[in-house]
Amino acid sequence: MRLAERRALVTGGGRGIGRAVALRLAKAGVAVAVASRTRGEVDAVAEEVQALGGTSLPLVADVARPEDVEGMFRAARTALGGVDILVSAAGVATSAPLVRTSDEVWRSTLETNLSGAFYCLREALPEMVEAGWGRIVTIASIAGKTGHPYIAAYSASKHGVLGLTKCAALEVAEKGVTINAVCPGYVDTAMTDASVARIVERTGRAQGEVRRHLAELSPQKRLIEAEEVAALVLYLCGDEARGITGQALSVDGGTVV
Ligand code: NAP
Image 1 (cartoon, rainbow, N blue to C red):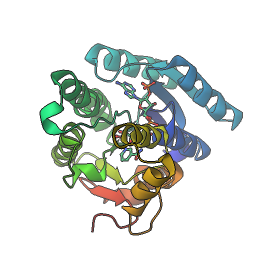
Image 2 (cartoon, rainbow, N blue to C red):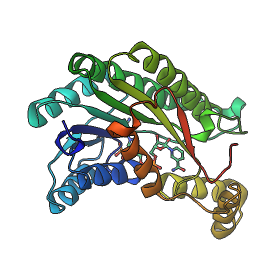
Image 3 (cartoon, rainbow, N blue to C red):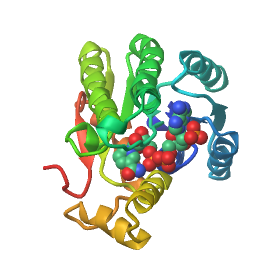
Image 4 (tube, rainbow, N blue to C red):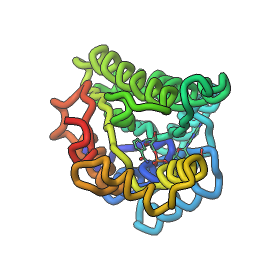
């Protein structure tokens, strides 16, 4: 089967990195189911895919709820005939000093970013193993590789995603299924806009100054574009990438070397 005949499910596909991935896969001819909790956003992305001449299915699901994940896969398989590619981009960013991290923030961050990725992997794998072909890409973060103050819950969730990715990759290494994590630095999306707004609120610094500071954390002195992340995801989904598995590939302008 060529990439153009594959079927993908992209979580967090309503905006940001997930949206860019959905559009990139669609341009390569992949049929894409696009999922998030916000109906208006997944509908809009599905329409964009259709406008490109592609096939798309908008789905509303909360990845932190295993029953939603089960229903999302069922709907994608019914509409598209199967799911050969899973891109797990759904995620939330939280920040607080450790001692002020509430149970609710800790749980919701871990449940969405880590348990959500786990539920999706568990649901996706049997079909891919049986077919002898599959591609799974989890969108982690450089916060999954390094520590940073005030993001313990987020960083712990992303470190967990890397552990999950590596173990799962080894379990299916002989089955034609690859599982990799992509680890972006700060990407110019709504998530970073919200991080900037939180820092502005807490520190009183000007918005432009905070954005510049985040950009300058990268040796390239810039934010990453969602399309740059999507381009790597597309490559990992192709047959040429069949030897790449269990990896955590950074797209971060050299921040973590
Ligand atoms: P974004 O623009 O905020 O998009 C996040 C997407 O995830 C949205 O579609 C959101 O839709 C969805 N989502 C959140 N919680 C969900 C849940 N429980 N169930 C289903 N969907 C959910 O953020 P982004 O920048 O594209 O981030 C995408 C991924 O990249 C995340 O995993 C993030 O941690 C990671 N990442 C981002 C950056 C960055 O700087 N932006 C850097 C490194 C890694 P709803 O809220 O409508 O559900």
